[in-house]
Length: 485
Image (cartoon, rainbow, N blue to C red; front, top):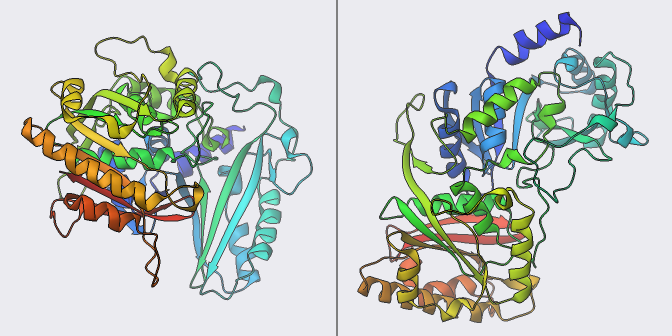
């Protein structure tokens, strides 16, 4: 990189604040906004705010946005605004796009994903275009013009990258796939046309952030890590104490348990994987290492062992108040296959490198039916920590069984456990996913209705302190219920 280009990058990209867009699981936008405010602290020029379904906007410097990419457990992507301009025709689009200093955002080795043999190059460029209420509506035609302009804009001739020296990120666990092995790191541009205004965003992540970077086997219909973390963080708001015992008793692939263990052991999501930002011109390895080391050493105001509540104030966040820590994790499933999968996933994660001790919450999956647990066993297992039950039961057409009947049984069991725990001087905090009911006449798919009928304490109409988040996963519309019952 020439000195002149480096100075321009420092002045225009690194040295000043930019607008960023974080993409969250649907319905958990406020959860992500709270997390980002805690991660960014006073470095943000204003508090994060929700701008639409699955979108949270914030303004800060690029290196602080790197921190969000490395640390956030809820964001699916973090996008940096490159440009925003009016374009009612292709001539205006080409003129404005040509004025963008692409060499400041994209490496000279970036190529369109349509090019031959992109694996020979460091990065493959993918342009994603959406158009709404605009005169320019042909997304493929827009992308083609941008590809051409960008290829000309980076100005340095495209050349194969030296992939032989590519190595995984520091801290990659054993058995994890090589992030740069035999392929490039994707670079993504998201181009949004709305009311004839074109906004171009550069993806800092590459692959979606729910991919934590280590090898992971999954059971049927696994839950994304970002949704699991969002549910865990939301459940913390309902805790009666600052220490919790996480109960993952229908564990499946163990997503809730794995995320909880990483949170409790201060293992940030960015430990084990590669990111697109590492292959962009502004990247500074020393800065990145300082960011990740600072988080690991608990030198930032929001560390990954806690979640926080933020005061309802305007202006920059001044501090983050610890709300809860995960003291213990209890994991079980009725399926032998699920238990085997979880054990494999632990061995292939950074958790395998942590020596168990009394201060380290670990995962020891057990073969056991959720319905066999008693309140007395839960109290004994949790010691003084408050029990938090997280559930993602199987549902719908994805698995061949009677889901409404299962949710009826779960509702009854939750009511039974809550009653018996109260008699023992404890309360039960619950976070559970349930598919939305089919409201058509004669429909028998009534998972949510059955759950709330048998456990009315989860209903916001019955329990004013309960909360429901409408979300989606795997093509299903879901309700996420949170309550202390």
